[in-house]
Image (cartoon, rainbow, N blue to C red; front, side):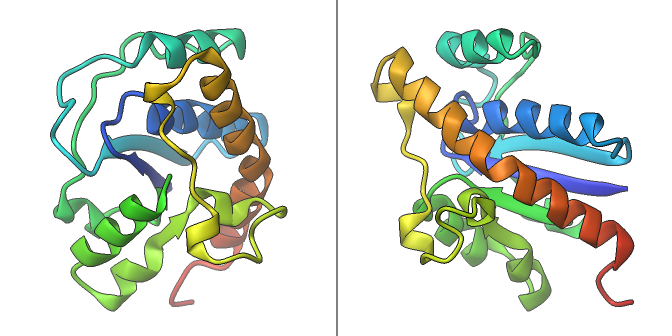
Amino acid sequence: MTLIAVICTGNICRSPMAEHMIRAAAEEAGLFEVFVTSAATTGWEVGNPIDPRALTILRELGLNAEDHVARQFEVVEFNNVDLVLALDTEHYMTLRHMAPTVHDRAKVRMLRGFDPQVAHRGVHDQGIYDPWYGDMSDFETVRDLISAAIPGIIAYVEELRENPPGH
């Protein structure tokens, strides 16, 4: 089994969108042993549902996230995850600081680091801004940015499956 955690600030917009989109892509690729979850770097939205605009975007993709409840990422989760995807630079820095070991820090990657259009750029050029402050077009942009990275994420997961770390 491969476990992916997708992390943003509040776990009500970007990370649940990415969670459901990556999960669907993994299933479509026949990677049924891939488990995708999402969480926040903060406790600001813990217990809250997904933002209605993010829910609308996911519904348009045929995905159901109505049961989503925001939660905060805990340090202990590094023990089980294979890949931690940060949505923006601040998340990336926070997660790398939280990681208890060098091995755990290596699990933290920028989600857009898997987008071939920006993979060659530095971490600071790979963020996805928070659409919460915007309108539906901002959520559509987030959807498009996540979508562009998904093929690279799926290829990475397939590589992990074929060549597990430490083997």
